[in-house]
Structure formats: C-alpha cells, structure tokens
Length: 587
Image (tube, rainbow, N blue to C red; front, side):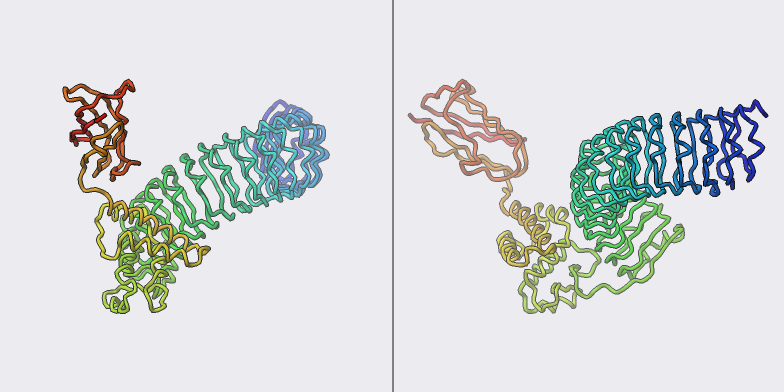
C-alpha cells in the first residue's frame, strides 16, 4: 500500500495502520470516532485531508508538518488551538467550523486561502484574516464578532456568511462588489445603505433578525433570487417592487400592512408574510406561480385573491379573520393547509380537497365578532359594505336593517356616522371599488361626489395619527376621484363653437371626449387650403371647455405668419369621430 496515492472514507477508531503510507496524497477520514491523529504526522505528501466530524479530536499538532496540504477539513471536533497549523501556508481550503476556537492569529499568513469556514466557534477578533485577499468564500457565522473592518480588502469574495454575530456596522461591505450570496441574519444591523451598490447579489441575501426599518438600499438588486427580511421592523416594502426575478421572499414578523408593491413579483414561488398587519391581499392575485404561501397571524378576512393560485401546495391562513373559504375550492394541488383560529363554520367548499392533504388543521374556530367592517356578514369587506353604511348614514332607524342581515353601526355607538364610514373604507380595496364607480355600475342616491367631499372633511377632524383613519381617508379620496370622473365625464364626444368668434388674433376651440382618443384639429381656408394643424396628442376622456384645456389657435399659419381676415373652417378628429365648424377672423 506504500504507493497508493488516495484513500477515502476509512471507518475506524485506530488509524495507526496509515502511519507508513507516506506516498498518500488524498485522505478522507470524515465521520469516524477518531481522537488521535498522530499516525498522520509523517504523511507529508498529503495535499488533501478531510478529518471532519470526528468529535474526539482536540489536538492537531501532529498535522504541523503537512506543509503540502492545500485542503484541510477539521469541522465538528473539539479543537481550540490552531497554532499547529501556522506553517500550512499552501492551504487554499480550510474548514474548522463547529469547534472551540477563539484565536485565529495562527492563520494570518495563509494568504492563498480561497475558502475559509470558521463558523460556530468563539471568535471575536478577525483582524488576523485581513490579508486573505484571495478569498472567494468566507463563513464566520455563529461567533462573537462585532468588528468586520478586516474584510474590507477581500474584494474577490463571492459568498460571505456572518450570520448570528454582534455586527451593527456593515459599511466595509460596500467594497465587496462581487458578492453573489450574503448572509447577515441575526445581528444588530439597522443601516443597510452600504449594500445599495452591490448589484452583483443574485443568489441569496439574508438580513433577518436585525433592526432594519428602511430597505431602500435594495431597490436596484433586480437580479436577486432569494431575499430574507423576516424579524425586522419594516413597514414600507415599496423598494421591492422592481425585484421581479425574486423566487423566494420572506417578510414575516415585520410591521407591513400594504403589500401592493409585491403585485408585479410574478416569479415568486415561495412567499412568507406571516405575523404582519395585512388585511388586503388583492395585490397577490397575479402571483400564480406561488407554491408556498404563509399568511398566518394577520387581519385578513377576504381571500378571494387566492382563487387563481392553482399551483399552491402549501397554504397557511391560521390566526386571521376568515369566514368564507369558497375561494379555495379549486386549489387541487394543496398538500398542506392550515385554517385554524379563524371564524369558519362552513368547510363544505373544500370537501373535495381534504383527502389529498398530508397536513390539515381547522381547529379553534370562533364566531365572528358582532361588529366589524363586514356589514352584511358575507365574509368579505368591499364596496357593498360601504354602500350599506352610506344608505344608513345618520338614519335613526338603521337598526331595522338587522332583519336583512345588515349591521352598519360598526363601532356600536348607536349612530351611523363618519367613524363607521372610515372603519369600512379602511378595510376595502379601493382599486377594485373605484372602477365600479367610474363605470357608473353602482348607483346609490347618497353616494355623490358632494357627500364624499363632505365626509372627507369630517374625517379630517378625527385622529389624524390613527392608521385606520389614515387608510380610510385615503380610500374615500380615491373613491371621490372616481365618482367625480363619473359625474363630470361627458356621455358623447363633441366639438363646440370657438370663442371669441369673430376674433383677432386668437381663439379657443372647446370640445369634449366620451372616451380617450388621439386628437387633431386642422384649419382650412374657404378654398380648402390647409392653414394649420394642431396635434393635441392622446387625451383622456373629459371636458375641454375652458381656456386652460381647450384647443388654442393664435391666428397664424404653419410658417408663423398672421392669416388674413375671412372665413375659416376647423375640423376636429378624435378617434373615429369627426366634426367641422366655421369661424371668422376680423381685423
């Protein structure tokens, strides 16, 4: 055996038979119960040695002469002293994770290392590593490190794992512009602005378990595939809206209420939003590639957005306010479903799914609260509920509506007023409600632009700091804009008489559009000669009557010359609509 260059995966306690195999170049003793490595001290031709997961090894001094080693794995042992390795300066790979090391100064001259794993030790000072500028992968997770300034010149790093330390300042990371994978979870980080220019991050970014509130530094990481932000203090996720390559996103245990920035992240397959403050999930209805979705611990009552998520295999909805689960009836690929701690009494819509479920929990259902924004108790808070409040606004006989299953007194103060309107408005999806008003498909005598404007003025007198008031007020304003459009939008497209007429030297040509259109006006003389063309562009439906909106002509031709007195005709073209009128220039 003296000439065997390679031996792998010997299973033994006693490795003394190896002492004379001095030609060995490659040796793996991984996963045994070895405690004594002295038989290896003369195997000086070794370039590869794997001693990992031998829990009895504490003394590595017999390895001090193995100066040809380029690969050494000592993971999961009882090593505390690395000084015997001080002369192994040819190493390119060193793994001593899961040991008892405090001092890494013996490694300071290992400048050829490309991969170093010292995780799960007791290291606090990493300054001896500062000259390891060839490192591609560095893993020092689960130590006691607070100062990471020593990584500043490690600009070749592709993978950096520093999770579970005591780091608060990550400013030096801004120089590591080749990073593809970065793990900083479970530290004390609040400022992540140093990451803003690291656009190489593609594989993975883990920032969970920190003190982060502002994630604007992430907005340019458009190629990132996996992002973990759980366990922070984030409320605004707007910077994530451009991260359209994301496949896995973890936002659980934050302070998020608005998830509309996620609506375009259509490549997501795994999304965790549990333990936030979310009530409206309509923004998720385009995320049909999702296979895993966690929404537990929120304020969700309406789950209709889930009806199109036919690829879901795991869905967690426990601890919400759900009573109607009919949107789940077609999710035939589900294998894990948690509906516990909601207000569900009827499980028949998912009867056909239950046999296929490997994990299913529907325990601890409670009756829905007697109050709440679901005025008609149909399990969904939408425009219909707001309309029921509008119909009963200041109506002393509102209690009569209970016989029809309608309860408009949300806060149960025995009057239907602005507080009830705000409570419902705060829970509805204005993006879904506004089109119904804009299309004039909802007609309620009390729901007018004038009344909405009055209610908005009243709402402004409530507690301006209350999140519910802020959200309800925003929704009412959005509905007012939609209703104003409905009430003022013309029913027909028309060209009106210019004014003044006769004129000298300028005039305005009013018109109105029943629908959006490309608008052009051509001006001709009596003999049909084209005098001027006014290209007004593509315009939205609306009224263009006053001087600030009407088409304007300064009485000049295409060459800027004033036209002569006389009769002129102007032809208005808007889409497939055409009309011509006459005007007079009098000088």
